[in-house]
Image (tube, rainbow, N blue to C red):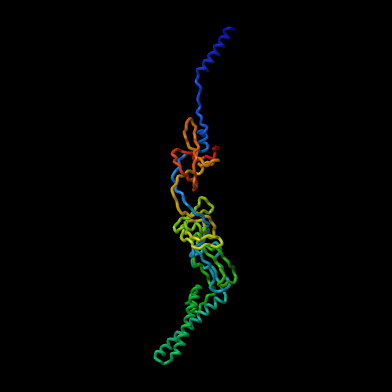
Length: 368
């Protein structure tokens, strides 16, 4: 029994001695730092990086409408009144220059050819008469008055003949065929340009006249942008500047170049009309489409960081600066920063000289 008590006492004594001789462990306090384990760093896809020099653009926002250039659109009217006999096209169809689109028939089609033949015959008769009288006048056989009357009648006949000839040729008729007595039964309307039919405003058996717009054709290779720019932004614009256009698809950005800057303000919209030339090889835009665009009016070099690296706090914006990495732990420190513009997913940093890496990705998982 005494032996047992002795052993117990010896154990207790040794424990007391050991506790008295062991030095206490010191733990570094890093309460102002943010600790992130290597496992969390990898699993969350975090990355570090440095602020870098980038080109930031100065832009002017504007609304734009896709329109055809003056030579890229045609509104087709008939030169003579008549009834639509045949339609050789449909809306949305691509047509070539000089392709037949419509055929008209009616009395005016026939009367035009008849009037031309009559004027042609009258012109030749009056020409012969004028030449005969002129010879006699030169020989002083006829009076000056008789010569003047013959000359006047000749010039009137010539004017009527030339006018009808132009009208017949404009209608696409062959004057030689008509003079030979071979009349056309229909008047054919042809496309003046290559393009697609955007409007077809008639039907078979419909009566049409020169005031009726029958067909609209737009060449998709000859589109441009009509920009509506606020008057206060006009001094920043000049020809040759780049226009960046998005049509709802973030992966599809169209580029244009300013060709003209307007000088008059629209009283209703308070905007100025400007025009920009599109690259004809850029597909996906349609006539009369309404778009938003940015006009690049300048650029400069700034220090920038990915926008997701900037954290907002009650006192402002901060970055997380990497102080050290040890024992599979990353230690970050809050760095107060002043920010400027945001452009293409990057934020401008003002008054910063940062030579240490900062957390640039997956910052949203951290709560300050």
